[in-house]
Length: 480
Ligand SMILES: [Zn+2]
Image (cartoon, rainbow, N blue to C red; front, side, top):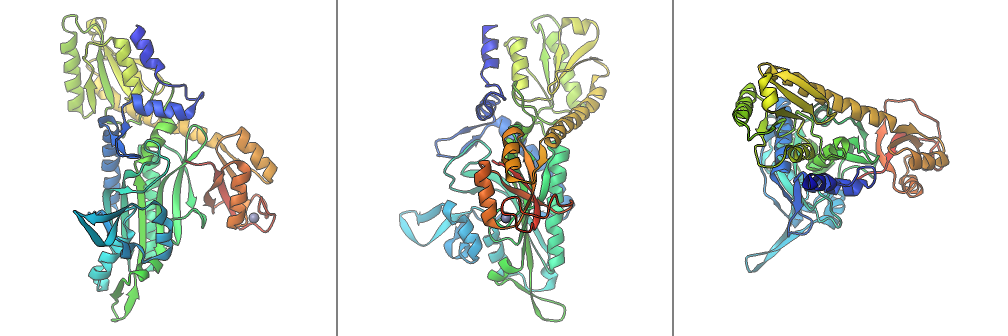
């Protein structure tokens, strides 16, 4: 029993110290660890399996809209990165360079991709000729490198995994439509598969992607009241592709510009899953992306027939299509329960001699700890509904939390006060000037515009900071 206590004690309470709780969960659920390469992670099996399920789900959603996957090199020649001014300026401070090949100093150095717009555009400038070559709707699953100074597991690391979609189109409208479509794909994925509610909108000038005309974001609210930018979709217009001289010949034999988009979601989203759903016992995974949905835990497994019956049940559940495993190690049941809870496995099935006698099992929900009893003959049929209920309840709970943490303010005093009391998003009017955005950030101890709100009535006609006419209503929030 002493050991069991130690296992549960290993994580800090979420409300006591959120940052420490997060670090503890990542470690104890064995999701990832720091490597000897400073700022870079090792994704352990439990963590990488979540990413694989995210990939599979999202990749299907992409392909349903006509996306094709490709793979481009990880090195980018310096001359290419420099072609678009805003873009290079945005990324230069965090780029890592390759200067040598073997023993020789290179004529031109290469950067390790921080993102691949430049390589895609360079390739298209050589390969696109006619309107018949358009559109190109491509995506790659890869890793990128950004030389971050401070790092945190999943939230900020130097090398991280993601997907980057890049598309070019014959018309402005078609590219804009694609930008908005991918933004919707992300919103649907995040709410339906990850059970994470969000606020979403266009980014302000200072917060948008380097080189983009417009950036659309999905912002989720973590349990500590901070926002996490969870996915973005960028519309480049034709400025970026023009910098690379991508032109096509239209039906009238005239040269035309192309219009570009890019969009991405990274392993940061695993941080969001942890911080939206986790509790003091560890991770809580939404059933749709949980690597294991069910763990069978035999009780008094040394008694005759228990292990056989438990393994039989695992086979039945696997055959029915569940992702299921069994913990038949020598550990005590209490220890096994703690581990299953720490790893966030949505359901556990307890099966012991008394259950077998009654031809039943005890099923326990990870999210609410609710216990249910099912007959062994029926359990495989019943658990689909239980998992779907968990998925829905997890979303509803997170949505209630989000709604409770959205407020509005008309004066700075009110905003500062509300940020102190009520963690979360605050809606306010803003003149659109970067200077005011900076002042608001300073006054509130770090709240920036998370996104603009374009479908609601204004709260007032004045900027909350300077009092000049307001151009935008925006969500302000502190963020990761
Ligand atoms: Zn202002």
